[in-house]
Image (tube, rainbow, N blue to C red; front, side, top):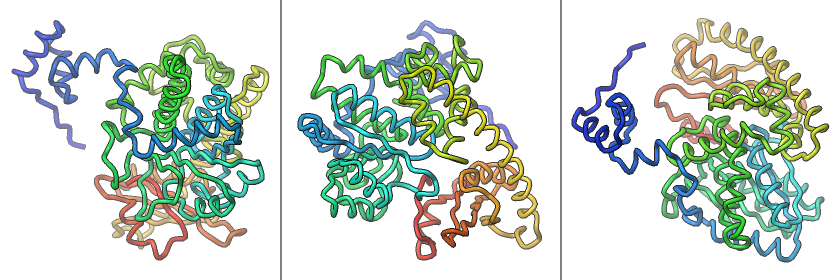
Length: 419
């Protein structure tokens, strides 16, 4: 590894230190982070929720708000469809809790990994069974063309909130709220996680139907946004930095039974929290449920109002996390052994497969193998019941893994994710 020490512009450092009345070292750190004027520095050092951009600048946010408001007014059942990772669970919890507080008739659903990646036709069928006339996705749906078609056939409208990159064709949904849509003007800040997109859509909804409660909404749900943002390894810049700064304070003084139980189980209750605590402790607990069992455990933890139920669920998630660690260690050893085989030495991208690797851990293991071999890695696990391989990949350097999957799309039943 070669370390390259940043050398800031001395004139910019001197000017910033003088304007802010801070030591030159602080000014140098700010300049090295691209913060070069006093106004930007004030926002950086004192992040405020009032600095969040207008949520209606997100693509289709106005359409989403109009449809959600109508559903609440007419007492339609809203089916919130999340995803099985920490971002998907936190975003679904935000939607269910916030819509419920607004008086909506709402039910939540988080699929298992065995149900398939993303919003599937199966999810539309579940919404029909629940008597829903509107589906709101969180952290999924932007590539779910078939699932939206199924929902439309069933007479169910779909509002998509997602942050993954769209495919070549957008689903025929009532609204597709995704900051990465290229067919509409880009919002001021794009790098939100799924929980961040859902939060901003609901923030817009509250501003329309209950504007007097908008500040309370932001204070009450910034904790879950921060958890989803850090757990999804989203860059802590711009609006993400604002959300996480306020979310950490809210998490340290929890008002939700599930958050409090999770902090107690990790011996973090009453202690100041940092982003590392979310990345290395809280986030992995939430992810563990979806990796080896049922993400509904994590979803229920974040939505329950019962301290007793929350305590039981937190204990369960701790046990599942231990199981994930054991399976991950074993699979990592096996994957590294396979990576060392002679036939894999010259490959620019490693694709490794074993039947015994669980669907839920291949992503973690792929990341660890990438650290060792310094090449992009795709790990596959065979499902004998479906007679199909399910996998996860991690890139290295500037290699665009999603673009590579586009190039191999004729070989894949379904795929998606980040570059």
